[in-house]
Image (tube, rainbow, N blue to C red; front, side, top):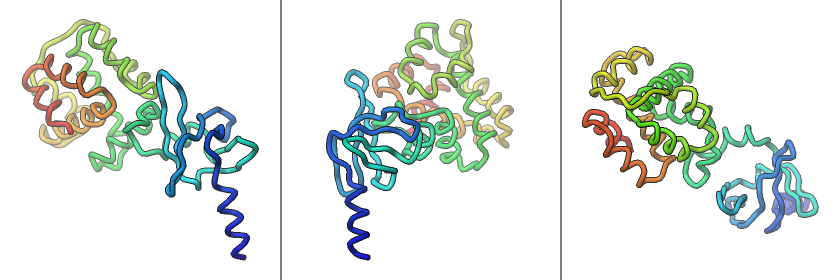
Length: 217
């Protein structure tokens, strides 16, 4: 029995340099690091994607090829949000993360909040800023940004004009709740973009919106 367990553990330990594939055959990268908790898969040269995976995520180990139990979409939902794996963030994971932060346990309501917040945010940006901001976002949520992006030019409004639509669309009870909701959307987004650019955006905002943006941590 002990030998069987030891053999199973050995089978679950991959080799450095092995190619890793998702369950659907799509390449995930190569193993570049092994430790007690799991292994690190890295893909790309210019845009490096780094994924930390537990050994339990392995379905099979072949001749220099490791197959995972999940396909790419399934893995996106299980990986911790943000950090070095920012390019793995999907729209669904983004909404789940915001919902977790808000404690709503209502993904439909959270998505409404995220959409109206981002829509109003696009109103505050120039065409050049919107184009640049979109490029800083993880690929997985650019479609969400594109679906709410306002095509017009930069508009000016105060904090109240920003929070009232969020309160209404998000079906929130107060302006304070709307402020918190916007802050958590911003907080999640800020963790996905370069810090220097987050500061640049802050400087272009009116005082009211700047307060929300800068309070998001």
